[in-house]
Length: 65
Image (cartoon, rainbow, N blue to C red; front, side, top):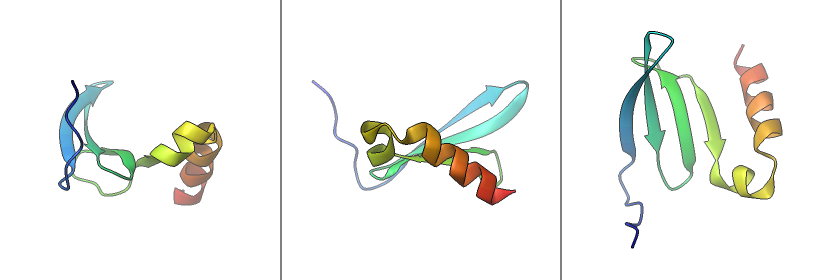
């Protein structure tokens, strides 16, 4: 049995290439950002399910620079 995702986002810290990142998972999707920063890569669940995840992620990443 699985636990439904609540109202508050789930946050976890992970290390990639020696640098800390924060992963936030909520009802809208997920976001990975360098620890202490707000900007990061976001992925909506709807984009993932529809198959547009790679395109949506690439577009958002290009707009952030």
